[in-house]
Image 1 (cartoon, rainbow, N blue to C red):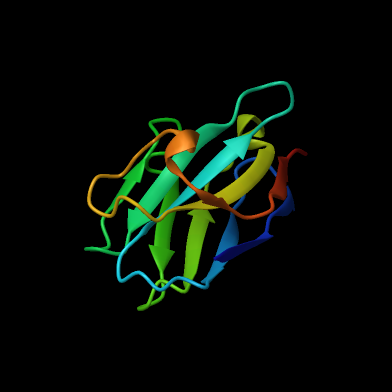
Image 2 (cartoon, rainbow, N blue to C red):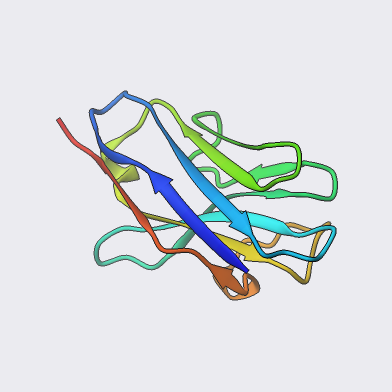
Length: 125
C-alpha cells in the first residue's frame, strides 16, 4: 500500500489550496483515509477522514466549515480542499490509511497503519 500526498505550498491568510493523496495497492474493498497535520513543536493532530464504505466524512472542530474532504469514485485519490486558511493551519500535512476499520472513523494516529510522506502548507503574508 502506498500513499502519495501532494499540493500545499505558501498561501496567504484567507486563501485556499487543495491537497491530494494518491492511494494505491489496496486489495480491500473498504478502508478509511485520513489527513493529519503536525506543526513545528507540536504533536501530530487529526484533521479529517473519509470512509470508502459510504463516503462519509468527519472533521476536527478546528477545520470544520473551512476544509472539505472528497475523493474520486474509487477513492484512488483523496482531496482536502482548504479554504479561509489561517496562520495556525501551517503544518506538514500527512495522508494515512486505516485498513482495519471502515465504518467508524478513528481520530488517533495510532489507528492508521499506512502513511504517506508529508506535504508542507505555510499560511503567511
